Length: 473
Ligand code: GLN
Image (tube, rainbow, N blue to C red):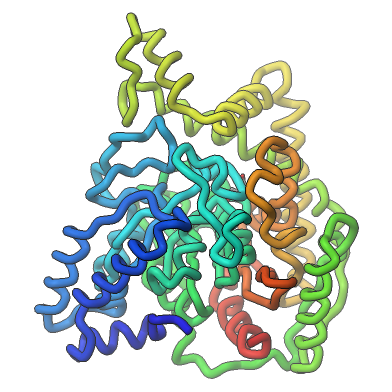
């Protein structure tokens, strides 16, 4: 049982003065302290959070998220503690402004209480690439919580806060949600501003929401979504917004789902397959039509992602030169040496691997063979998904090929780590919304089911996800 009521209820009670925002923040900070052994958290903001809570308690209208504590992945700019992205190179870096989505959440009364652990710069699928420590899975401390938003996902299941923010560039919100058993939402590309979030791969970066229920996630998404003049790639909100709490449950009857054939093949662990097969049966009993579809280019999405993502990473990480942000090596004798030593000591192995792959695929001799070809296949993938959505409302399948793996199991082999993303990266390359919903367990470990919808169909996806969540409970 969660110690947190639904988010809308917390806000209503805080506004009615039946609950106090100060108590909510104290409760969150107490739980964070009690569960420190899971190493989900990089820093806390007690003074700031309590000051904000006091102001909300003495105001007449605290907002739609009045007094609701939350945790942000440590790649969101938030005033107060360092924003590190779990990288040594950003140690000592203070946010000069806040991420747009943080501003929006705060303007509705939400209170950031802590910053969560991640793979450094969000490069990874387990939090083992954090330069600081590895977060433990709340269900089994010998296993990873997934990544890169593993700290945020674990924080939600450890009941530290009612919701947490992650980012999803290639699956980093959905895969940890599946590994720990919470809801993880990746919006349509551009639905939320990326301003003030440490950039990874700009053409696939999105803001992820991690929560206990679809309805909680939808309310938070509704507060964050919409155009922002600080991010030219943002899109308009849907007129009805994304808060589905007042919308009647439209059920699943008559909705058209398709299982992606390529995701159910070789490489999928049998215990995950069983859970997904079970979801399909339940969808059918609820009156949904479920077919199978082949998306022939989907097996190529991993290769495409691991060309385009490092290409964009290599460009985005070039700004960390030891002069402008965070760490600067003091022993350097001149500027060139300062670049070399600061980047050499500041970046971790995986960051360096991506910088090298990225600069390689963008270099004049290899651009056509790798980067350009990857963009061509990306377009093919977009066309295949778009044509699937002409016949089906939603695509359904696993989130990841396995349940949470053991700490250390994939850490030494980057390729086996990358395989954890094989079912999530397509949604990022195509720019469509996707969600992971808790679907069952394999032994003691949670398994999520993934739903995807056409671009900008976020409201429909949230609505159908709530219906599905209802029959999976
Ligand atoms: N695991 C993927 C990667 O390492 C996804 C990362 C992400 O979404 N931030 O690139």
